[in-house]
Image 1: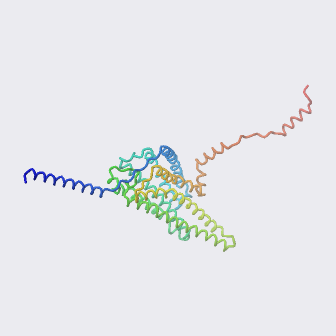
Image 2: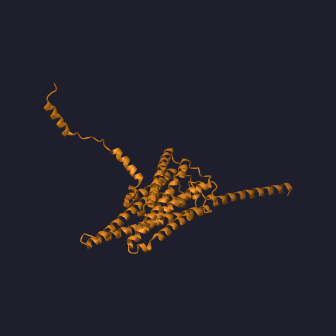
Length: 376
């Protein structure tokens, strides 16, 4: 065999080895690479304009409504109760959520605005997680307070006092801050592993296990427990009212009757708040869980609608509580702003004043003119 034949055989073997290596690498890459999730569908310009207009409208409503709740409790000693302390915590959480609307508006106008900004993207989402978590857990604290007051009225002040309320509120905020802010900024996120991340995509921002823990502990679990406790409270209050009416032949002692009626009214108020919270957050929570567990990616139109519902909840909470609470209505009626608005409304509705005709004086004048006769 000649040298040329040996070189040809060696060249053929080398080419075959390279081809096999290339095919093996291609198969390995195809096996190890995860499927790319579908891109998020952008919203039409009409949806973006309407969404931005509503979000701009939400900012003053959220800030003024929740700010009014905080100021009323601070300025009126009669409102400084344990229940209202939890309501102040809820109002502060809703206020923080209203402030994040500024960044949300920027993201709505430009969906890729935060794609290359690691800190801004995490700040936006972590602030929303902090506000929503503290809001839900503060409402849960109110539920526990109402439950203990109705189920254990004699030992209520020993079980829940100002120290317990302050400790519970501090635990809610510290726990939620650690879970929503410290862990993601400490490296528990997907941005570091996703160079071309999308800030609108939860799966490319948050660690899947972390976001599921947040959703369950700060949303789903408290909501289920609140529903069970309020159902139990309604049953107990209605049974006590019916039992007392039957025992007293249709009449009750005034003090106990007033207490049970107030508690029933209070329970109904917080059931309304719970209903608004569930309607506002259930669609958004469903999207989060679907995107974490499947390849589904909600369109930007759907995200705009559902996010607007969550912000609407922050604006509705103080309005419902203030309208349904008689002490808050009385305190609000004493404020200068309320008096100014009421005075302006009364001026607008005021009818022109018509001076009544003095018929007696007119009759005397006519009689004198008749007695004197016609002028000469």
